Structure formats: C-alpha cells, structure tokens
Amino acid sequence: MIVIGYTILSYFLWLGMLIKRTQDGKHPFAKITAKYLLLGQILAFIIPLTAAIAVFILKMNIPLNLVTPVTIALPIASLFGIVLGNLKKTQLQLVQSEKMASLGQLIAGVAHEINNPTTFIYSNIEPLKKYTDYLAGTIRADSPLYRGEMKAGEVISDLKSMIENIEEGAKRTKEIVADLRKFVHSADDTANAVDINAGIESTIHLLKHELGNRIALHKELGDIPKVVANTGQLNQVWMNLLKNAIDAIEGNGEVWIKTSLFEKTITVEIRDSGKGIPHDIMPKIFDPFFTTKPEGAGTGLGLSICQQIINRWRGSIDVQSSPGKGTSFIVKLSVT
Image (tube, rainbow, N blue to C red; front, side):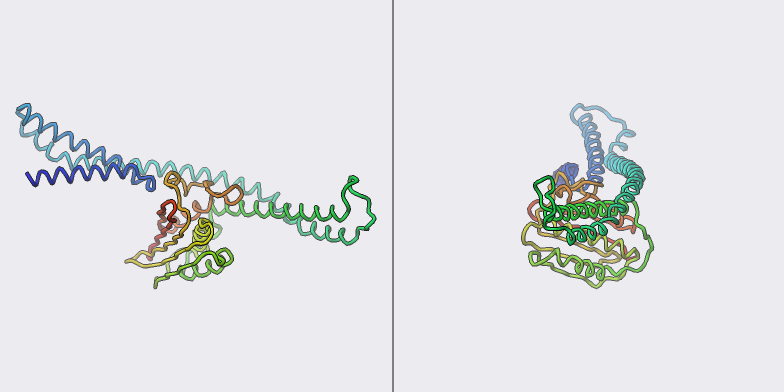
C-alpha cells in the first residue's frame, strides 16, 4: 500500500508540475510540449483507471490480451504527448521562419527607399549651416523686421535651431535605416576567432559616458577560449544588451557582467538591477519592432537582431526577469 500511495502521489505531483509548465509565459515552446505531454498523461491515467473499475468494481472479466496494452499505456501516452508537442513546436517555428523571411524582404526594400532621400537631406545640412553663418555675419542692424515683428538676428537664431532639428531628425532616420539593414542581414558574415572578453571590454569603454557615476559596473570575466563567430556581430550583441541594461535602470543602480566556461559552452550573463520585465510581455521581447521604450527612443529591433546573430552562430539567448528586481540575459556559445 505504501508503494501504491507513493506512486499515486508522485503521479499527481508530476501532473501538477506539467499544469504549472503549461502556464509558463517565458518559454512558449516548452509550454506547448508540456500541454501535449499533459494530455498524454491524462490519457495514461484514464485508461488504467477504466480497466481497474471494470475489473474490481464492475466485476468484469477482461481478457488477458487486453491487459498488456493497458499496462503499457503510460509510456505510450507519454511518448504520444512528447511527439505531438515537438510537432507543434516545429510547425510554429516554420511559420515564424516564413514570416521573418517575408518581413526581411519587405524591410530591405523599405530601408533602401528611405535611405536615398535621407542621405540627400543629411549631405546638405553642413552647407546649410555654413550659409547660415555667412548670413549671420552679413546682416545689418537696420535690416527690416520679418513680418513686421522679428529682427534679422532672431530670424537667424530660429533658422539655426530649425537646422539643428532637421539634422537630429535626419540622424535618427539614418540610425533606423541602419538598424533595419542589420535586422535583415549583416554586411559581413566572415567567421574568425573571437575574443569575447576583449569585445566586452571594448563595448564597456564605448558606453562609459552612458554608465556615468550612477551605475556601478561589476565584471567577472573568466578564463575562456575564443569562439568561431564574427567579431563585429558579437560586439553588436554586447552593445545592445548592455545598453538595454543601462536604460532599464532609473537613477542609481548596478550592472553585472560574467563570462564562464562549462565543458564546451561559453556563457555570457548580463544582469541589471532595473525595473524588470512584466510577465505578460516577456514572450514578445524578441519580436521585431516591439519596444517598451518611449516613442522615438528605440526601433524595437535591438533584441531581434541579437537573437538572429546568436542563432546564426549556433548559440542561444535566454532571458530571466522579475518585475522590480531586474533582468538577466544569458547568451551561450559553443567553443567548437
């Protein structure tokens, strides 16, 4: 009886764990597999239960050739759940790949069309500044008022301000186009031996002005070998993840960077003490154009680009976050 009780208890604990896993918003594919595995487990429970009721309560005589299939129902049903879950996962991945391919073609065309007029605007800003400076030095104090209300000096001042706004807008547009192009495909896919620690150090140096005095940076860079990848692309990943960590912190805070080696896998963890990511938007953070930043502060492509780069070099990127406690991005790359 003790063994039977222990078996039943273990079974229901296993069902409880699967039910909890089906509610997991952080790992959508694991959620799908858990759902179908749970279905298989329920079937595995119903079939033997029906046989037991038939034999011990209804006093039915079940032929021996029906008993054997009942006894192997559990492993078969479990396998059924795993196979269905993996098939559904593969189907969703294929659909997502098709969507991304179509989106990539659309983005490439849009980026090209936007880039031409933006380049034209940007290339004319510098001459426009020089012309404005020239006019500012040649106007007379007795020049007539513009529309009867603005002095020539005030007009020049407004003109300079407008040029600065145009320059800022053109610069922002160029950055968006650059992000769009990076999202579609990197210009350089050359593989080489990449020193991850050196890349992180270089990225930190570029972001010193962002860190300032308000963010304490903690580095724990382990003794790790080089990986076969692309230096520029991986540095782009560290830049995006570190920039996101900095942006997630309001006021003073801390950022931790750790690299380590376990067996044949290098792990890079970038953690912050920021506001964290709400559970309801966790499944969307790698979606193209999804962002929680204010309008004009981000394109929503940073994490999508990071995921594409890491996948390109046969690695993985995962995120763990608790609202109010911070976020941790974990990148894993194979040494071989």
